[in-house]
Amino acid sequence: MRVLVIGSGGREHALCRSLRLDPEVTELHCAPGNAGIADLAVVHHIDPLSPEQVTHLAMGLDADLVVIGPEAPLVAGVSDAVRAAGIPVFGPSKDAAMIEGSKAFAKEVMTAAGVPTARARVCATREEAERALAEFGAPYVVKDDGLAAGKGVVVTDDREEALRHAERCERVVIEEFLDGPEVSLFALCDGNTAVPLQPAQDFKRAYDGDKGPNTGGMGAYTPLPWAPEGLTDQVMREVVRPTVEELARRGTPYTGVLYVGLALTSQGPKVVEFNARFGDPETQVLLDRLQTPLAGLLMSCATGTLKEEPRFRDGSAVCVVIAAEGYPGDPVKGDVIKGLTSTEHAYVLHAGTMRQGDDIVSNGGRVLTVVGHGPDQDSARRSAYELVSKIELRGSHHRTDIAL
Ligand code: AMP
Ligand code: GLY
Picture 1 (cartoon, helix red, strand yellow):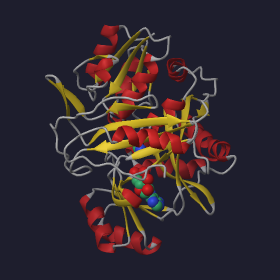
Picture 2 (cartoon, rainbow, N blue to C red; picture 1 turned 135 degrees about the vertical axis):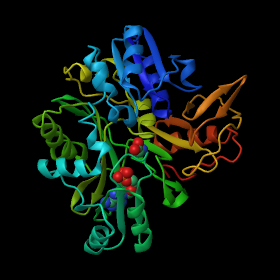
Picture 3 (cartoon, helix red, strand yellow; picture 1 turned 30 degrees about the horizontal axis):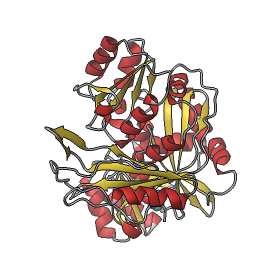
Picture 4 (spheres, rainbow, N blue to C red; picture 1 turned 90 degrees about the horizontal axis):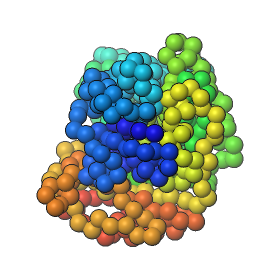
């Protein structure tokens, strides 16, 4: 099978690594990739947001499957164009990807499907925002309606800060605060059928102790030994299947991975967000534990023939993101990274990196994901942090409390 992966993050490096380990994959390509992916796949320098360029590349490579990693190409209609050219694609259509591309649309689908989520108001003016903030009270949750790379949400007790965020965005969703631990559950979907991966947990805030601004994610682990019994079945029943059915009913069947971000509230699991793609960095730990060969799974989603429930290996995986100075604001780029090595139980996945002569230099906000694994969470965690301590990147920061 010839596979083309679109994207350049830690998630795509993890996807490429698992695809490389699958004997069915005879050729692996990635666009635009990064310095780590270049060791596993042929990288192509095209614009991943251009439906024409991606389709042209996929056709030129005679690709059997195109796997789209990030949300931006999905929302730009890349999967529609590739599918129209007759090539199987893992990733939803532009219309189905609006489940992530518009928070207001996601709420509308959830309401129609009877999916438990926070009560919310869509606001376009200061007056509407003021009314919604008063209705739900503090802590205030204000979300940019459109895509914002994991940085569009402000949760604050400060009413002025909440209003400022609302005014910065064209349209916001203001919603009730959901209290309780957060869980990420991903479901693979082929348009009609959906099967779950195992739950994972992400650490969204920039600094230790869940302090600081929201980020794309600073670390993750799987499985969740503390998760309530039956959680996956409940979420499949109450959230995933009704959502997939509702999207199919609207004529926009969902193909790819549905990312369900949940808060486990005292009234049961409620949806915090949907994403139209694998989560980053949860994917890095989930794929570490995935036993079922990845290419066949993704292909069965792309071709509407999904049957198999993915199997996972015993044991635990923990990952830690190393971020550039300034992230999640303006990251400093171009610093040399040293100590890029692996150990028996840990390895490095690249995100914002590029090759410059003999050096590998930083080239984005989240630069590396270090993955450790072991028979239990403690040992996986230790292995990950041991390797983190060997890596040098001037000004970089990482959380020290992932999976603690
Ligand atoms: P989102 O981009 O929707 O995932 O939001 C980013 C983060 O903001 C989530 O992972 C939560 O930590 C927090 N968040 C979003 N919505 C809510 C909510 N209704 N209640 C509490 N926290 C929230
Ligand atoms: N880790 C959160 C996300 O991928 O959106």
